Length: 281
Image (tube, rainbow, N blue to C red; front, side, top):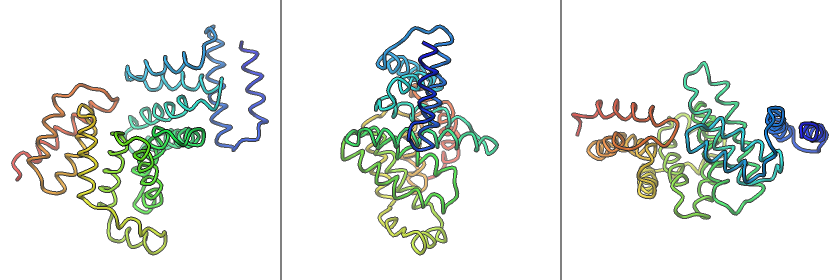
């Protein structure tokens, strides 16, 4: 088994693919070789994906990513493994807090971007690939300055909107669009001027706080137990001085179970924000 995997790795090196995708496949190949070297029995793509899903649900995204990579080494065009590997990479990256970890965080986001883009290429008619591409770019843009965010902005909007066209009840796509409206409204006047003048950023004129609220409220309606939906909605309510509604969301967060690797941090953020606005409004 290990010899077969090493031969496949050799073939990847001379396959006419883009450099980024060749690097990504090589990473998958190396992960599979390690599995074989450890004496792991041959598994099917579905088995690798199922194990990855179980690990992901258990809030172990790094371990889940290894399983999805192994599935991709068997078939690099496995759509489900592609978008789920992107998702797992994002969950690993978003836990790396602080400026000193930005390089590693951005590297993981860029890797996730590669996988999400390939997922869309493999199947452009499923919502998950478009959502993951929008979400990865949204995450990556938040680590950048205002001008960099503008460069990502149009594609983030378009991919999230496509996801909603394909799945009108996709809570994540509603969240991304709501966050997009809020992020654009938060941009400084200078950044917006630069965008419109030099980057063709006139599309940003469609952004509104009302749309941010509507989209984030819809994400909460569809998936009410997902903490991050409620937290971002509460933050938008605070920006609009709608403190009573913000407090309602923040108090609800305290009662929700952890379902995401960042939920403990989100709960702490919600408590701090609740304390800040306790006497307001």
